[in-house]
Length: 530
Image (cartoon, rainbow, N blue to C red; front, side, top):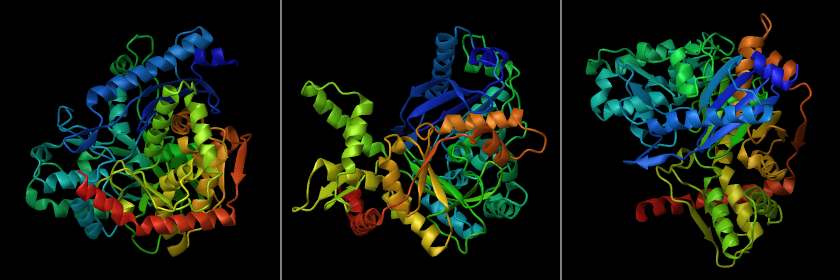
């Protein structure tokens, strides 16, 4: 069938992902070929010391993103978007959305970016014998309890952003196992929340006398491919205000951006891994066996099919690079230089390859927010240099690209060097990799591992979610997600692999040693520049 006929007949899958700076939608066929797209740019706000996206902006962004997608279909094919084969919702993982029994949100959405749950995360890690990062939903809930927040006694339901949007569209309080693994620890033997840890949490708060039990306020866990409800009439009207979208469309389990990243890079088998680098950066490595000990720098999550995954998550990646790029763009306009954003980024990124391997005596911390791996509760973007440093644009840009993945390097060294985890190849995706070869070579040097990129490296999230939707409605009986992706999606994909060069590895390692030694400078900036 041609593309227009596919869309008219509903042999399509729609993936929508709420990223940190954009809400993105992609409509694909069942083999992953992109048919149309739409997006909406947005930014989180710091309100009362809390990083959030207000509910009205969440709703507005979803509607505009979908409207832009529908407009793309109309403009490209001359038809209205009425039928869709499957829909999948994804979003940035973790955070805290708590609702009362009438499904009213108690407090504004607390995102992954917040570093406000340290006391709770430490206590839960101690009690569970399992690393609970500050970003996780259970850490946010327990911190609210420790803070005696007024709403905690009346909580009826907590979920993630993806789980919330899925609920608005279907009425179903469910969640994909990968996203669930960023809320509460998962037992991969039963593919559900860890029963022992659920009981330990209940015991921890027993003296509070709450009417609710933690088992009852978490969303139901589903695996990739399992039914997760259908688009209701109310959900269709909420998503598409034009009224043209038909109700009854099946939705797959909502997933987190980590799960869509694994799917979009076909990195869900053992010894495979992927690294998603954009506003934040995280690596995901599917494990052959459990880790030997608990590490606060490493999260244990799962694939969309429930396999255990070691995750190193870093709050800050490209935001500071984007800020500097905007400054250069402003200068260009003042001088009458008309340069597109894509050309600007390509010029700056390619300049980095000409820089000295160790950054030439320059140092950067692109911390817009706190960074758990380096022990920084808050962030102050900072650039410093030695008096005799080689202060060139090439070294400046190389330094900022290094800084974007330096904290990730610190966490990954624990995984690969201390734990001895083997990785055959890392698949890279996200904005960091958009400029050909540059981000890929920097990441290969940092990880000391071959890094591969696919044609979809720049826009992995909504596409990965669309693939999960397609799998849910188009898989053969008994077909695994791994088989579906390998045989029906990636069999003809163009993949470029970059091996790390030893002098790049040595240069990056020298930079990281300076980075680690000077991190106290960043902490001092937080204390003295408020």
